[in-house]
Amino acid sequence: MKYLNIKLAFPYNWYQYRRVKLYDNNRKLITRIINLEEKVITINDDVKEVTIKLDFFKSKIKLPTTSDENVYLILYLNFRDSFFTKYIDTLKRECLTGKFVSKEEFNDFNLDFYSIAKDKARKVNPNIKHLLLGSLISSILIITGFKDFSNGYYQLAIFIGIFSLVSMIIIYLQKQLMYYDYKSRMISTGLAFILATALLNNHIAFYFSCILIVLSLFFVYLVFNYSNINKKEETLTNE
Image (cartoon, rainbow, N blue to C red):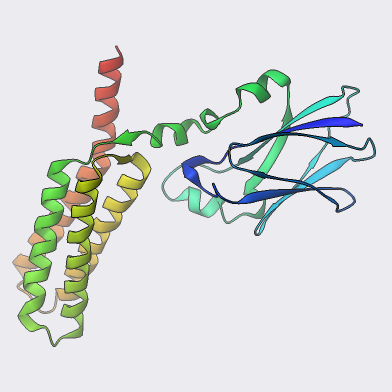
């Protein structure tokens, strides 16, 4: 008999309420484990590998050939942590995987394992300049949209404007958000502004359309740049 020590960590609170299933090489369910949980279970000596499954994720991990009673398995998501590639990598079936490590590595395993994820999991205060600019663009879209409400494109622009304005208010009321959530929501709002302007492009003055697009691009730029400024301020504070 061996003692299988298992620890699971997901970044960004992904799948935090889901249970990952572990099977032995005989397809027998060994255990279920949730995010940030640690378990110790016994397995037979004839078990040569374990299979981990969650939805369409599935990976097989071979047990190490060792005479030690205790073996240590960490489970994690293996992906490139950047804005676009993370969504591509999480479509891979073996994105959820694991590896056997030493006792020391097992004890140290936590969310710090995701070095970039740890950085992006920090909380930030919403930037008032972002919110004011976003609210201004939203208001312009709403007012412009009511110029010809019968036009379907205008109705969609009004919807985007109202939705974005409500989003700005909610973000302001939340005071602090996870950096990743804040950035994703604000960038999505900026892209929605550009889409709404494109929808109105055939119905509003060229120069006014250009001003709206420039404001929207500037809004997205400010959000991107905000992360760098915030990190520099944190570094100076720590020093």
